[in-house]
Amino acid sequence: MPAPTTTSAEPALSGPRETANHRLVLPADANHYGTLYAGALLQYGLETAYATATRAVGPAANLMLRRVIALECRQSVPVGSLVEIRGAVLSVRQGYLAVGVIGMPLRGQELPWMDGLFGFAQVGPDGLPCVLPVEVEPVAACPLWQPLIERHAKLSKVRGATASWLNKKKPPPGETPPTAGEPSRLTP
Image (cartoon, rainbow, N blue to C red):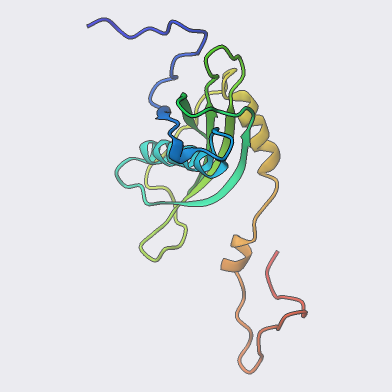
């Protein structure tokens, strides 16, 4: 059987580090304008990102969506369109994966119709973040992924409060935690 070839300007998948998801935009996914509803857009992106992260980690994956880092719809997508969304792991830290998704250009277009960044944490039996069970290699920088890699680098400097919540110190015996309006004891 001959190897599949691409007949369009779309780059081929970069191998096992990249996934592709195809969806037909149905009327149930549409807003009142007959185009893809933002909630369905988020669902499509999240499904692709989760499949990408799970595939990268393998059978020992127990991933939890930690945050939607960014999601942009660049073009409306009419009902009846068949869309392709590609996903790749862009960044890996101890127990955290950042996954990028790109809605490949629609027929007759040159630019992606959407893109996004999603963060996933590996969680242990206690439901708390833990180290990834395997080493995961991020996708290599290439023209398709470079814009999202750069955006992730900028946005990764913005930290959520989860680490502080997990590291929250308990008050000494006899002392009560702060109430609303009082300064908290969160560690930096």
